[in-house]
Length: 463
Image 1 (cartoon, one colour):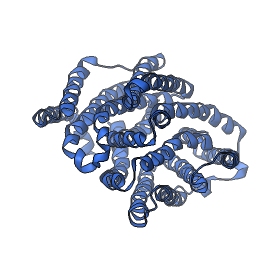
Image 2 (cartoon, rainbow, N blue to C red):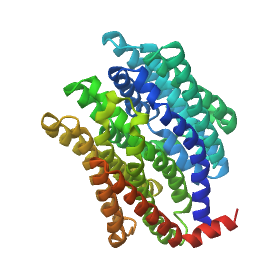
Image 3 (tube, one colour):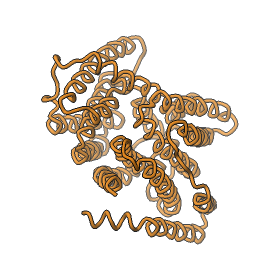
Image 4 (cartoon, rainbow, N blue to C red):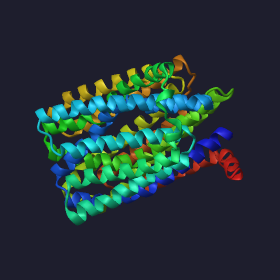
């Protein structure tokens, strides 16, 4: 019960920081779609999407190595991991920055200076957030995330709606928001107490790079799955249709916010408990619960969205409606793949996790390119679904090489049928059938809670 309690508490703390700002941000979508053209929204989405591939090159994913080794290191060894990782990050960032400005002088880029500080600010806050998690300070992580998100929302309203900066305003808002987060975490983590050039250690450097470097490849492959779609859409269909696709992604990413927050807590939970005698039983039990909760979550979204879509999205973006269920299912497989990925990370299998993500990335690009001329924008959403589906099933079977992960197909089929029925009712927009599906899904959620009532009861008693 101790591990379940720690997982639930960590998730609730992280979720509290995310949900409030995500809800506000979600309901600001009408403002963005009203004030920004499809092309402007598509341009912003490109800059945001590229951060997923730029940041790993700036940090070499050393913040992930720091997270793992800080947790398992003795207290007197933690300084060398912070110092070594930070010195490496600063060195790599200097080189990449130099390359960026050389390229910027050769190729015409919009907002050269703003984009540079946009990525640098994300890099700084990302590193400090991982240090905060490694220290076990989930509350600090949550506060930092909340400060960043809430500042971004407020600043976007000011710069976009009030001043009318549009694209430049969104970028500037993000820079300031990330720096607000970084300043808070600088003092919260007391990183200055851990850092010293004298603490740089060659063995720590080797360990960090061996663990982290494959994750750069993993992140690039993840980017290929998530965001290469944008590049292909812009190249073949134009930036305006990328704006449509960006809105569909924003709607489907409602649930992905929860998946991402939970996986942060789950990864830490697995790392801290992997040497326990009952870790196999615990992880298998949690995997089934996670599957059921994730599927109930995406089903709930498509049960509710038909009643809200017209209020949330300007009519110019109505074509995004049909793509949402496809992308929601893709997010479901992505979330489950990440759940299994946490086991890889805990056991130090970073090369293996990178290989599986690479295969999925290649699949995404190939399927998208093969389909785009015939199926247009649907090629993007379908290729994302196929790639994440393959990623999940590949990891589900490949993880058995070093961890005995079970899957109970019998319990999964009925719930999958509920999702399919909900999808059909969503497309034909039959409100009565949608409400029936919603009632069935809520009933299944109740079943999940009843089945796990003892775990919930023990957790509540321990508060």
